[in-house]
Length: 361
Ligand SMILES: Nc1ncnc2c1ncn2[C@@H]1O[C@H](COP(=O)(O)OP(=O)(O)OP(=O)(O)O)[C@@H](O)[C@H]1O
Ligand SMILES: [Mg+2]
Image (cartoon, rainbow, N blue to C red):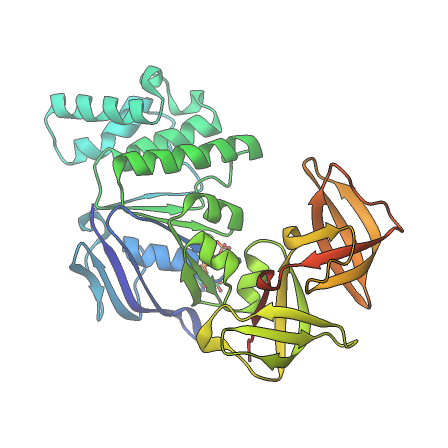
């Protein structure tokens, strides 16, 4: 196990800059995700760390050792890392045991050690009884577990994952997310995980690094990214937010502010980041659908609005509604016990702390 440190990483393909001055660290034993839309540079960053891609600038350290800097690259097999890909790459002509033992054999470890370590790794991923099966005799989920066992068996300093669960069906993917995190916690493996799926990143990670167009836009715990987005992009990408164009009417020193919609409706809100406050001008107000509550009467608190129910869709524990407030449409998630009906006029309240202001300009 070891700490990973990436400093000012730049990767250019001719005139295309795929990764631009990306810097982050993954602490010993930590699980960190690189999250962002397709083409934002996640795989490229991961491949540079693995040594499968050369960088144009920056420094990569694993366990304090420089593995890439100024065109000096330590070859992949000398970096002490293992990688799990989207395609399981389980060798079909080998048994499960041989698939897992392969990395140990290439290191010429004693036969007894190979047997013990491969058996342990198979037990860890729940494939103890499958050692003699061939790669072709396994389901997708089992193949992915073989790939995991193969990755952990050599006790690498760092585990890298590139969308390893995206070929699995929804149910199995959901189960494997929990299993993988559980495995990672038990082994205490330093892990960097690439995904474009925000709920996957939220569920699995100690910290998330959000990327866009080759750049890092925000890093923090899942909670932090959800509650305190730094940009409109972050608010839109993590969770489902209503994003409203507003202008600042007044702002106070504690981060509280009053903002107005185009039709003059005012909303109490807050700036989550002290260094990103505005005292005037346009800002985006982000309101999570689940932070809109239905209230029975105007109780004199702030941020109570009249709304017309435009649509109601049943989701199980909640209903998702389109609400018209003045000229603005809001998506709200309300409890399914007493859902409103289409056409009904209701009253809603939004906690001022739940109206998060971000300024992108
Ligand atoms: N070998 C290459 N030559 C030229 N451009 C490349 C090459 N590999 C990647 N790119 C470009 O670099 C950018 C980043 O690609 P990358 O594969 O890192 O994205 P990603 O975030 O992993 O996306 P996805 O979620 O689709 O896998 C993209 O614009 C891509 O087209
Ligand atoms: Mg990718």
